[in-house]
Length: 332
Image (cartoon, rainbow, N blue to C red; front, side, top):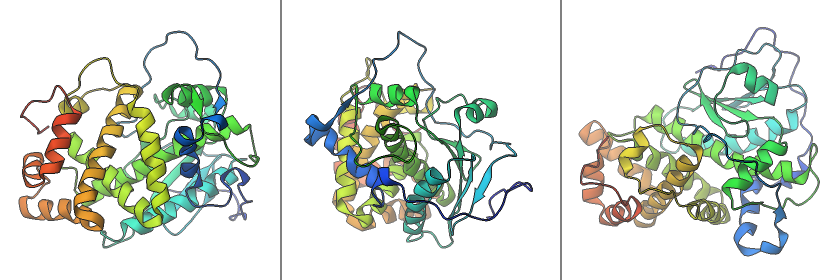
């Protein structure tokens, strides 16, 4: 698949400067999240949240690819970028991680998975008409992801609200913006990798017959690749999702609620539960956990929720304990 490139793309690829905020470490933003639980003294208080507002929209849908003609181009092997002028360092930093993740997916995929990421300013985000809050990654087209180019006071508020009022402390000095702004983007980038996992799952036909199966498969793909890149990255993700899960929803959810419209808060809580489910399956099957889903798809034509739970008792226990309102109807 060739990524869409507008004819007015400007110039050749400049060499990106090093991103000091990320300390030259692959996925280092995730590493910083572990300090949220282990080093509370390093946490930076975030601005107080504004008054009551309408719930934020969850990134559960595919939106139209941005039709913006002033975006520049940064091409990679598998991860290609269209970025707003002035955001090359941000594009290059995400590209480094996505290249590693897409290479990891090729362990199960017989051809390269290419992803196009759009790095947009807040004004460009509004111009595109994306209903998801700026600072929350969202899928655009079948193989695209839109992300924020810059952090600001609103992205700080958005992610600190999800993490009990605090953000991870960032070492070094960002090339642009404050440490808090860089921290808000570091949290958001965790979900860029999850959306990449979704793209992989959709391409592989592993979505199954229920939305929670698709979510579990995406989390399992991200977990397995993160495990290969280094166990510390998995610990960081554990820490992040543990914090998110502490913001328990007011009502009891069933897995079927994933089929409906969710707020950002609700979607993040579901992702924390699906991450736990991926951890359960990975603990049982190890690095071959994705092959469990692939074999089910080949045998039954789809990954069927009922079969998956019946054949993996620890996963069934997770399922029953995670969704208090769930009935025996596990399908979509």
